[in-house]
Length: 467
Image (tube, rainbow, N blue to C red; front, side, top):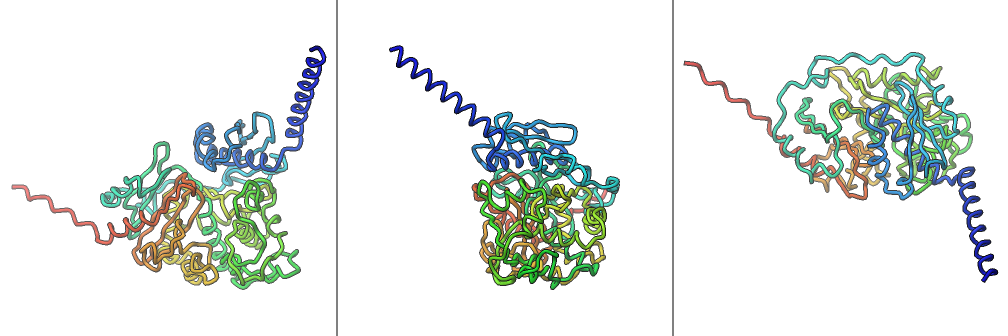
């Protein structure tokens, strides 16, 4: 019996030593999957707290858990003066995201918050004061809402689970909006991949400046092989031919780029070709990051490049809330990370739906407007030639949705969408937390709003004359 007890004691000791060793190994050399879980959590909480003004514990419980990965249940976060740190089980694989005024939050995958802080405006950008002009030229919404549209925004089935902000614009007027509890017209929300469409518009503006062109090739000095043939047009149409994995697995190219790489553009730029440029369509977030880097490289200094989105696009159309986030090196994370209020996302959609015209001024070039709404043949008609979608979130064709042929979309992860129908003068913004596994498609909502608002609102009956 003593021998058995002694053997059991040794076995217990070995198990304890092995467990201590395993924990020590995880602390010193955590798997990339652990790092991604923490970096994602830190980044989402950081931006939601410092940009959107939300509570960290609420974001950790809701937004961070949305992907449904088991590891995320064991993440804890701590908030500092300008940063958020996330750890698994309270001590493993710490990752930090740092806030900069005007630039939002960026991950610090090298563990150096000061490297992130170094990318900052010399002085914070000047945000114009709130204007008393009627929306969209100002911030006042004084005209009565359209009851028909409001009724549709109150339909849970049409707006889908997790809807947080909805704005409907008809004939240039905000006719209906709705917000979930805890959110309002002043809450900046993440557009995820709707950011790609904004990146395309910024590239078009830089082409209008004469600094880029659709057929511009040799975009980066280290592209001395077949990648030198990649043009701006290829990046805009997602036909670069670069080998990029967008499967959204535990650690694939897109999650690695967003959360483990300090220089997102270099990570993508170093990828080899898997097809000749212009021969195949492949939707990748890294493509939009490269486009942003190409735009930024046309400026002599980083400060001018960082100021360009606000100077050239956001300020002219009144997107006061827009925050375009960068990576640690200062490259705009143009595939995913732009925050703005629902009204400001609607301003951007209205600009596109109006053919690039804003209050009589042609902001965006006409050739870009033609391409952003025109289906790409290589995408099978699903995508356009300039970083937008022709098919809706349900991947149905425009014909299958029953929407007008000129309808096109900006779409983003977790149920973000802007539907633009120029022929109907209709723009519909829908923002929320709706994982794709839930199968929500905003097209039926847009179709219902289109049908309800085809006829103008009846004029109010005149007041009866006083005797």
